[in-house]
Amino acid sequence: MADGFISFEKVKKDYQAGEVTVTALHDVSFAIEKGEICVIVGESGAGKTTLLNILGGMDSLTEGRVTVDGAELSSFGKKELTAYRRNDVGFVFQFYNLIPNLTALENVEIAAQLKKDSLDPALVLEQVGLKDRMGNFPAQLSGGEQQRVAIARALAKNPKLLLCDEPTGALDYNTGKAILKLLQDTSRSTGMTVIIITHNKALCAMADRVIRVKSGTIRSVQKNEEIIPVEEIEW
Image (cartoon, rainbow, N blue to C red; front, top):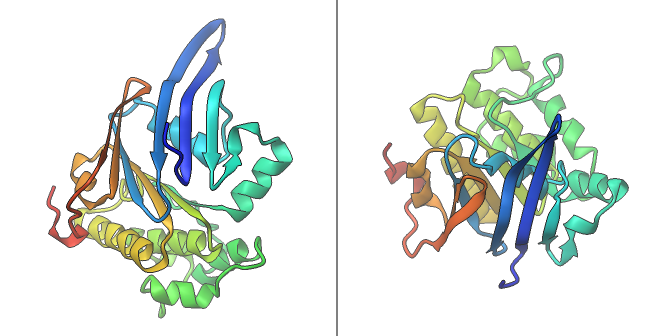
């Protein structure tokens, strides 16, 4: 297995459902390079979210080895995982998980306070196109604007890794494309490694690397020779 910025080696994940053992992932091996946009695609229940949760330090693995930027994530204890989630990873979910009684700026400030080398919250909100909406509460923002706040919150931490779980799932077509363009542009301009999980195969065209997951295992890993700008992708 080639070493990368991210490396999964023969990863297995079992869950106990009463007396039954359910295998969510088995024999999962792949590598992702620093600064890549990686799209992980597969049907619902294929194991994508389990994979993302292990990479995000939110779930442990049953067997195998996971390394991120030279550190063996699979050997971390609870305290180390907490530090890893706080310092190294930004999360963007399908539903925005904003705090409703805080303004857009305050939502981003909370994340920025977690880390010493965080970015200026107001500047990040400006970069995601919300310069004039900083004082608005989530209920006063559209779905696309709320997702931009969620992305700004993740970026303000200045993470090594941005993990996006169906980031356009709750958005209409045009807004979804705008969000994906923002993610693509951010990766290109900052060198941040961005991982997007989706069931939408059309998004594969925007990625440096595409990992296809089926029934809890990796079906293929492909590096794209030609990367298509998001605005040129149709689905």
